[in-house]
Image (cartoon, rainbow over all chains, first blue to last red; front, side, top):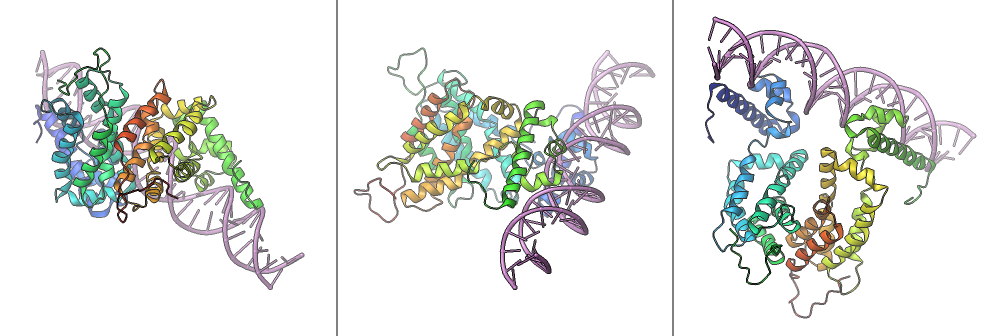
Length: 206
Length: 206
DNA sequence: TTGTTTAGTTGACTCATTGCACTTTCCTAC
DNA sequence: GTAGGAAAGTGCAATGAGTCAACTAAACAA
């Protein structure tokens, strides 16, 4: 669905990868994560077990197939925000408009249940999120014209990426997200540009 | 060092546990985490491999022996804070006075290097921290007289426990901790007690 | 067509982790 | 004291994740 691969070779590769991921998810949902071995998955997808590891780094990665996009979207939400909108505001909008609908999708129910009930997968999911900290922090720092290792930017990035974990299991996820962003928006202040005096700095960044 | 166990049996048990942990740390520091197998550790401690797993839940747990205390201290820092001191302030003091000295201890250098250079251990360490979220959140909620699942309390707890990860590798850790706590102290507001009107509520809690 | 890349296979291997049956050691109650 | 039970420890076998090396075969570039 994303970009159809060019050559036949790459198409076939993508096909087997998809076959493996599909087989894995189906078996996981059916029997539970721990009751399914890599062998089972390989057999269901009609490949060898080593082939599975050629496509996926480990068993957990079979469940979370596409997370590259999330990072891209996140960075874009910061970089291409409307003029005059603060960065925390842009992130709040992104989370509310993009993440919540995805999680609320009815077909996602079984998936969510699977992840929530498997500690190993919960741990992996959380790390997946925080792994994007640096990329998001860099985007924020760029927008503000400070160095990529600016602590305030890294902190904001990390705290935003913790939100899914904090909102999990709440009755009203939307309200939860709003509450947390209220804390961040109130407390976080953009770091001063090292070169510019702090007079008259409007929030327009790009 | 903590509390000497009562019976001979418990003393012996503690002794073998310590022997295993010591052997493990020594080997890890010497060869690196991945180059040491459980067999090696068991042999060095003169026990069987199954005994290792009777004392430790897994290979990573061998590195982080004592983390129970951290949680206890953390909760105590909130519960027994001086009258009139806000909770974020109490946590700031605790982090500055307790965590930083420990991490700065010169004997800790090799240990820190070990953890930082092993992705598996970094991941485990981060989860170790966030695993205490619920206990800390409950303590905060108790002090404020709200329910244990109050979102603001959980958020503060989680964000404080992220601080070690955020401050790691900074040149001036103390300044980093201060910066992050400034964000939290400014943004976080104690949730209103559901039963009491907001007039004249002093901060003395216990 | 020929040669090169690369997906996939096969099978053996390491290692963490668990379960089971058994011995030993300590504690407790008689 | 001594008989039992609880708990620590052992040995062994098994499962399951993940790796490695040598090989086959399809697909591609020339």
